[in-house]
Image (tube, rainbow, N blue to C red; front, side):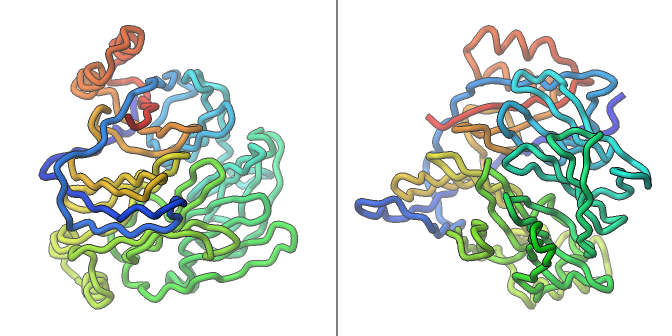
Length: 370
């Protein structure tokens, strides 16, 4: 039996958009998005494939918390089961890492995982303040990196591990830090000036990986930065009347009534849940009511926003990048399968979807923009 159903994004309402004048001779590397502007159309997606993740006793997914596509594997982080599952690009189950315990190579309270450029899998364990590196994704081969800090999520490069939201004495003191795997040195890169924000419902990630590209987002800050030797990379800034001020965040964080806190939070853009980049586009999702989705065309810097989602794919969560394509995911409910079938004219893809049931694992949508 499924432990948890994945709730797909529900899109409704008016269209929004914003534009940036194109630059001559060169594509821009930094962007500014006005989320309060309006527009009449949104680019349509082209479904390339549906990847139905194999459903079996050993591959059952309870919570699709993170998706990473690397080389010929798709990595699924299941936070509820404390498990990393690996599938091939056809959706066939390959292997998993499920090492709960206190012995060598085991973890007790894993919070996040990532995959480095060589295909090594890293799992951060809150219980031991350590990161376990599984060589080539093999659960039997491991190294332990003692970090000595409590954090929420991680992102790994060739040399550094970036840590998001470090807690010290129960307070989120550092928004971003880096751990040098060669020198074992931990360096704080950005202090957290809004610790009150952590009493509010927490988003899934600080980091968004598109192959070797990594973006970092700090909650309630109007920018997303590409990590390159720290925070000196390109960035995406955004503005809206729905972005709370520091004073409003502090007031929300100290509100005692949970219902009042939730109702007030729904009035704002509370976080970013997607920032993924292909060679041609950057796709973003801003958490608000309704959600706002932005698409940046990198060739000319033009920007489009919508709270109806991307036309041409089922109501799904953009969650990763595979080569030149975006990946999204949805739960195969009867309604979602019907909508997904209508998003493609390929009979083989339609037949693949019709074989699924509501007890099947989530489905990945491989798509690009027309």
